[in-house]
View 1: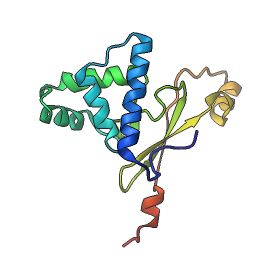
View 2: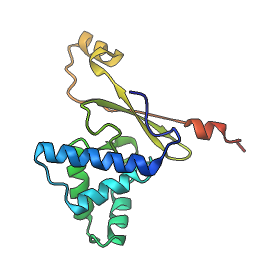
View 3: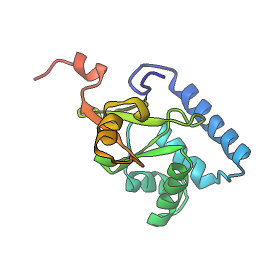
View 4: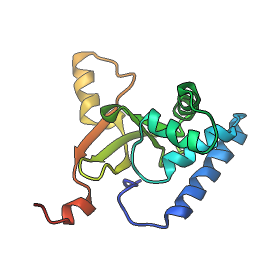
Length: 160
């Protein structure tokens, strides 16, 4: 799988498809995608940028879902726990999963100018980090790979 998030595409189609995939996964796994969880997912999908919990909360409030922080945090916890969203540690923010129906280890490419986030798949079992851990006797339980730089669109923009 190549990175998703920087390429131009039919965005409304990608949002619809992603919500349908999550709906299907919830049904298969016996999970409940409540209206607030669904809307939080849609908010994360509306553009390929990471959003902080309070950004999500503000949009949920505008849609009538309440203004208390637990509303957003519970929805985001459900989405991240079940692999439908990821937390971008560098930004302390959340992004919808680009591959919600696949088991994978994501790597995130974060544009420092426009804030776009692309998700790529990594294979930690066969990578350099795994080899380093193996030589030191370390057992990796969780790894987060985030790279910051310029997306293809911002590289094309003239710099001042």
